[in-house]
Length: 172
Image (cartoon, rainbow, N blue to C red):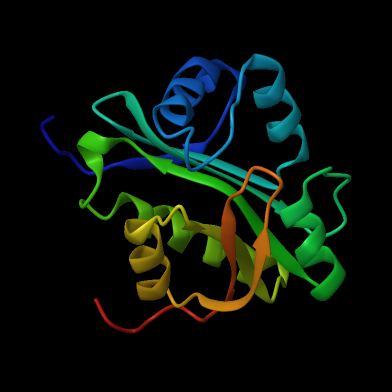
């Protein structure tokens, strides 16, 4: 795929098919999302963004702030321990676009939005069994640190991670 500068924009209902397809490609490290789940998750999300290159949705992120009625064990784990957070439910970058900084760009938008509305931290979980080393490296570089672990009914183990919302870097 030819790489062009991605456009980050708010996700709309018209993005459902593209977002569902991106999610399905990595369902082993996220969870299933059909049309009904897409509608549910986007309804709960405080911030829902897509990245487009050449008019094609190539990445997305769904994030929920504190106080949502989200029936998800990982979200509830953070809710029991943190105040004033933005939970990253899922972030997916197409295989063809990984390594081009699109994930960093999406997280930069999350951080900026969180800072603007007074949210103190970003949080999410990363698979450690089975391992997801690419996600662990990405989140470590983004400033996330482990604050706990959970064992899920599926047999997965996840690292619960947190990143303090920061001021913009003066580096270019």
